[in-house]
Image 1: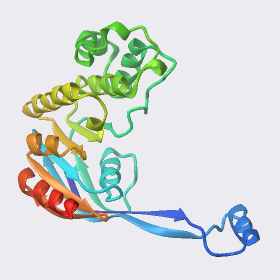
Image 2 (image 1 turned 120 degrees about the vertical axis):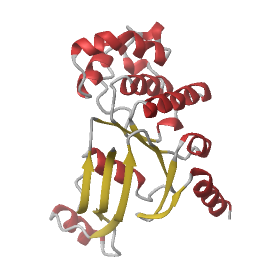
Image 3 (image 1 turned 90 degrees about the vertical axis):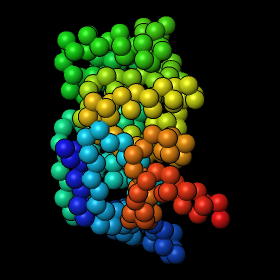
Image 4 (image 1 turned 45 degrees about the horizontal axis):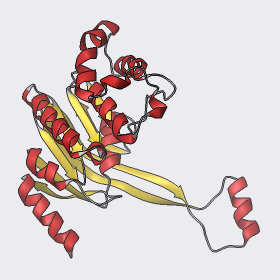
Length: 244
């Protein structure tokens, strides 16, 4: 089964910029709403597919369009052109702090995020212990999240997400936070989800994870797909270019 089919996706952004003009003219343009803008083409005719049980890696330099593509698949951004079909329940971990309430406890946030991602209160209760065990944060269940480190938040959010039974899991730089033990544990969990039919798209700069766990890799550059294929081949080309 195809979990994701994206055809000819394009996306542009208009951003303000400074022209070489007198200060007064700049101030007037800002307050009049006529600030000079330029168009940035974040995605240019991008197409991809992801099957059930596939772990697809996306690599590329910052600004290459990786995160924009995930946000369009997740429905956070509207595409300008193209077509997207998704089959199944989507969970997107693009910003670890979205949905969290820092003044609530870890326990409260498990119920909050679980509900946000489509779980019933009954399902959350049934999976609560598994979430806590995976996160390795048992001693902090009653602790308010504002006291958590970035690594602890990553553990918590990831643990909730993978226990929500997603059909499509979108991960943006999630493995850039946390210690090596938890990165490996999380990668193994993704393999388990794959075996159960979840399609995972992983954006990461961690080449060892991409090479070890991804079935296929897409290399993006300036809003386009530069190369697509086996992880070992694409990452080798990418690292060779980066080293020059």
